[in-house]
Image (cartoon, rainbow, N blue to C red; front, side):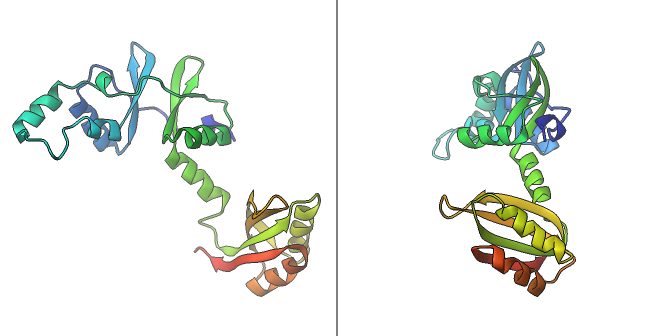
Amino acid sequence: MLVRGRMSTPVITVEPSRRIMDAMATMKQNKIRRMPVIDNGKLVGIVSDKDLLDAGPSDATSLSVWEINYLLSKLRVEEVMTKKVLTVQENTPIEEAARIMVDNKIGGLPVMKGDELVGLITETDLFKIFQELMGARDPGVRVTALVPDTQGELDRLTHVISEAGGSFIAFGMFDGEDPKNKLVTFKVTGLGEEEVEAQITPVIERLVDLRTCCS
């Protein structure tokens, strides 16, 4: 899966000369939390709702509400935006975009096609992907288990489920408790909880959680 398949597009952008109060109104109206800043067709920054809110005086200020509004009316996006913008190309794998966002503690990345802004990938887009990956909206028996991190173990696990008449609708693998194992979470249909447990017990290290979920 590549970024271009999950990015938000078209992108709502803002000019650096716009007043921050106007930018805040645009974000509120469109229910978004960040906007790329475009100047003459070129990406020059990114501004978030936090940037705009932090631009205002603190609660301890002695200024009147009229004075505060006057000061805010003078501030422009270019004064509060982040100028060193991290971006990804549209053909970037989605997990690479997620890694960049996590490593840099940011909630969104402008998506480029060469030098052209074509989209925006955000933490919300990633949450939607995770929801699909784990079959959050699909009913079934959900299992979390530790399995040995050795060749062939996943094949054994999926084989016993398949042979018993179960069908996988979601499967994810995560770091285990130590380097010798992995944590797997999957969801299956066609089998009940007791049947699933009976089938997988011989091929896993430990059952962490098992439940029927989602309607």
